[in-house]
Image 1 (cartoon, rainbow, N blue to C red):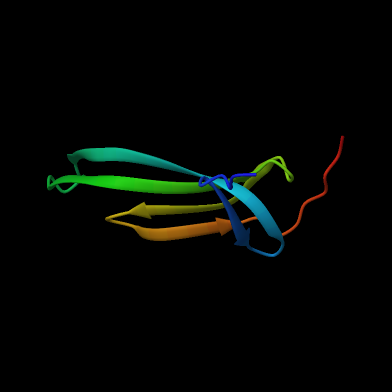
Image 2 (image 1 turned 90 degrees about the vertical axis):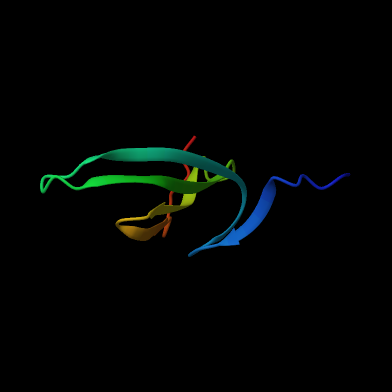
Amino acid sequence: MTPNPSLRRIRSAVRFEAFKLVAIGELGGTSPINSVYAGRTTTRYWYSSAARAIVRSVRHNPYLGTETVELVTFDLRP
């Protein structure tokens, strides 16, 4: 069987096989103090079909920094 290059093993509180998805966005405008801003945001998601959920996301905003969210526990129901 050929390994799937988009399938990765990640470890948060629990180890999952997950697909990595990347979303890139553009932001821009004028701030309340009338300064002009523009930038690119990047969000990476790891989706696990076993958990039926996004098990990790990492969001980067050039003005706010990087934020990481990870699944800590889950209860799989039918």
